[in-house]
Amino acid sequence: MFSDNKKGRDQAVTDFSRNQNKISEGTKIVGDIISEGGFRIEGTIEGTFKTSGKVVVGSSGFIKGTLECSDADFEGKFSGTLNVSNTLSLKPTAHIEGEVTVGKLAVEPGANFNASCNMKGGVKSLGKPSEQKPGQPQSGPTTQGQGKSA
Image (cartoon, rainbow, N blue to C red; front, top):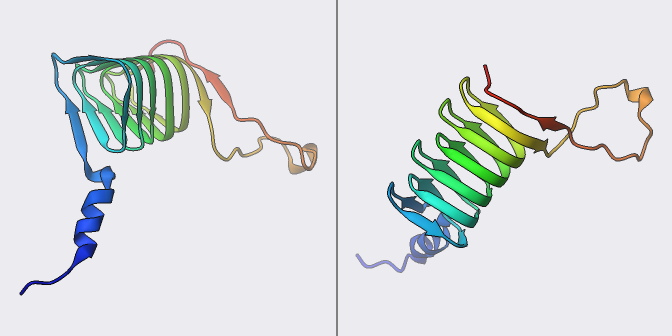
């Protein structure tokens, strides 16, 4: 009837990835945010925003400054330095300006992507294997994006 099952309690305390924070439309936060959980942004954030979770920016959301996260889905606007360790997904209403570093990038038609983009991770050589010198590091591709995607 009464079990001493501590496994469930310990997991709830340390698993922040399931926590979802929401910044509603009409809310403006100026300053630094550091969190372990995910966020849904419908309001405005100005400053430095760091989380190990996923960030979803709704169509009314706007972030100005620096954002560091694991994954991000954008329907709203961003201006500044964006560092996404995994996948950045841009919906048709997204508008991104600044410097972007991502693991993977998904851009839907209609999204505005006016940013310098650096893709990190494993880089496959475009040349023949004999053209590359052994022991020489490969540099990641850099893309300059201007205008709307088609």
